[in-house]
Length: 82
Image 1 (tube, rainbow, N blue to C red):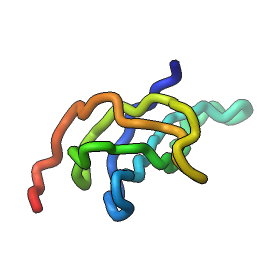
Image 2 (tube, rainbow, N blue to C red):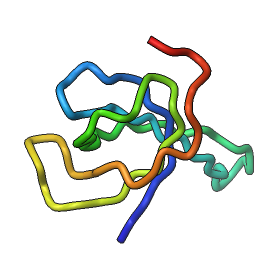
Image 3 (cartoon, one colour):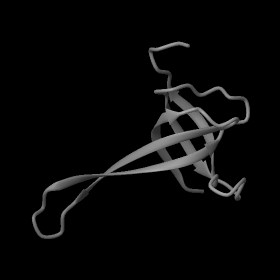
Image 4 (spheres, rainbow, N blue to C red):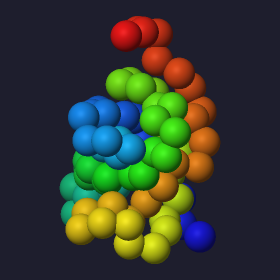
């Protein structure tokens, strides 16, 4: 089962969070490290995650048009509270 670690950037849709995952790759010619970013929509059944949390997501069956991930664990809560 594939998993990724990222930061919650949006909690606007109901029972859904948008997670920004960053990874570093090395350029094949120039050997400089480049940051690649991608957003994933993840299912949050109990709406536990909040903006800025560091979470781990795992792949799952398709839950909607864009959601193919679900929250596995909240690794670090953000400092801001609503």
